[in-house]
Length: 529
Image 1 (cartoon, rainbow, N blue to C red):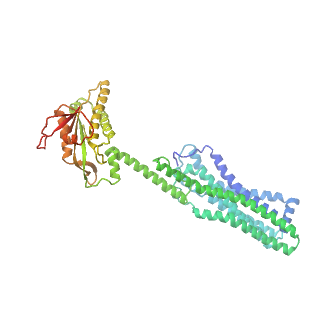
Image 2 (cartoon, helix red, strand yellow; image 1 turned 180 degrees about the vertical axis):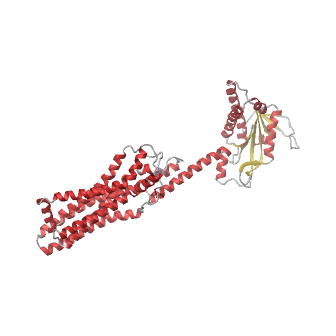
Image 3 (cartoon, rainbow, N blue to C red; image 1 turned 120 degrees about the vertical axis):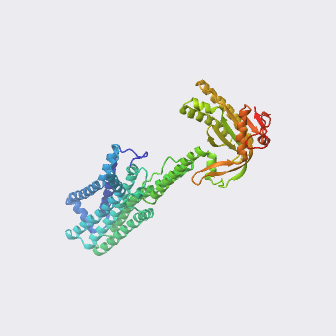
């Protein structure tokens, strides 16, 4: 049940008191509505009952009976809420409740509105039936009047039970459900009841329109029938009575309908608002916050699906980042977008090889940990130079780094970018050596070889492990030119083919052609001052 979005349960007693008060309030409103409508019904029987209650002292029994009923309802509510309260107490103490208790508490919490609504409906079914029977058997009320009393009280009870359902549900969603379900997934709890959203809307429409209309029509029918049979009330008095009853009925149900409409609207609008906010955050690249799921209906399942999508996007982001650390973000994005053919593509590019000088002796003279730290600092400085000029680091082999400009992303100035990257490597190495000298460490030396030509760029490797690589003589010659830098005792050499592609002005000094391994003709190179 734990989670980073779990609210505080320090006011646990107030939360559970809120459940009792909301259920009690719905029932008191129902009983009060029955009493008001009975008092305003223009029937002789109800006028006689008002006189009995007011003048003969029977109101005491009336006001003792209903608290007893409400007390029994509260006892049932206490029994239903007991596992929820026990689990909430464990969470308040910072402990995770055991799995049996946690499962039972989750189920009871989701079903609590349904339990209370059903119990209240049973109360309004049995209590009015008992009262109507007493009216007929002990007070001598006609059977039609007794049935009318029962029917109207039960119809009002339907409204009260529905109001209790939505009040308890709204309170649970705003207090305990976020604590018990920090990750959502209410729909996955077994043994819970679900009400589709369409049924909620239909029930709200029926309660807000049909039930008041039915109560009014039945009351008018019985009142008109009784007035016609007895003739004991004048037309003016009957009309005033009907008008007063109608006004009271409309006002009461207007207030109830507005409250029900607010609760149902909130139960739909808030989850939708959560999802829209999540979409905006996802669009901005923020996958840190989940959708708060508070129900097990269609909106709850949609919220769970949205959270799964957020998890998948976050996992993909982590994979992209990890993949980008292995093959650079540029290659990663091209591979994920399917733009790199498996068979490769012939492209013109500029290769840059850089290699540390005298590194073998350095490794022999230092501890492995120091070697790894020094290598990481050096390659970080070199890779920064490559990236700042739109190049891509292909691989590290020992103390050598291979980079390319112009693929996989097309760049018409790839030759210039490679030379500029070589110059920045020189500056970065100078800065790195100043730091090393301050620390009492020996400076590094390196050689850079740059060559331009056609390459086959694509995915190589085995069926189980693929890698992005360049194939062709251009790659081999670039590596050989990097070796020539050692022979010429310089740090940056570029080939004649690269010089032909340059658009900018650089200080280049031609060097004597040299033969290199694997090539029959001498290679003409230039030193970059």
